[in-house]
Amino acid sequence: MSDRAKTLRDLLARCTPADATERAFVGRLGALLGHGEAAFSRDHYDPGHVTASAFVLDPTGSRLLLIHHAKLGIWVQPGGHVDPEDVDVLAAARREVREEVGLAELELAREGVFDVDIHPLPARATAPRHEHFDVRFVFRAATLDFAASDEVMGARWVAIDELAAVTDASVQRAASKLRR
Image (tube, rainbow, N blue to C red; front, top):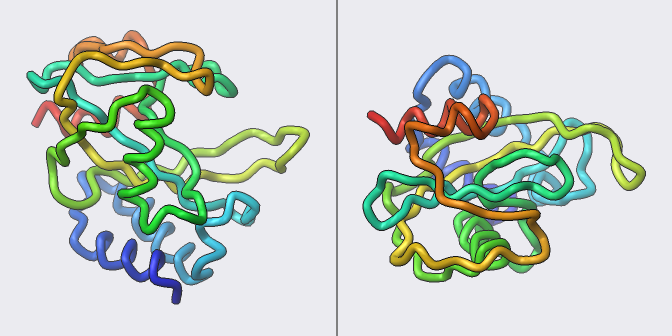
């Protein structure tokens, strides 16, 4: 098993799923890690591959930073593929936030994996239908200042209590943990 797969398996062992849905996602992710380093390759389509994302809270903890995803056309948390140079999924999540919204000063607000989600991606010209096994972390930003990159169609802070009007069920399910 690769170092990244072992590190993620160790993180998952300390993860407490919030419900049956997340418990099933954690189990499926554990099975995917049996593929070793291939589980992190964006070319691993059957059933999919590991991605990393970040739920970034504002300094007060009352708002979440969302990006308007260019390919999917929806408001979601920053995140994306785990690149070969990322030492682990946590490093990938931090890199994605830096690339997509320019925030580098992030404090890990909760130790370990915050949430696990598996969601389908439709077939495109460059990839067949597959799933993203998204490992999510929660951070607190030191500032409200961000700069949306060309990778995203926009970015904004959204009050946690107003997420239902803006984003999808996957983000809402994970964000419900922030209210607890």
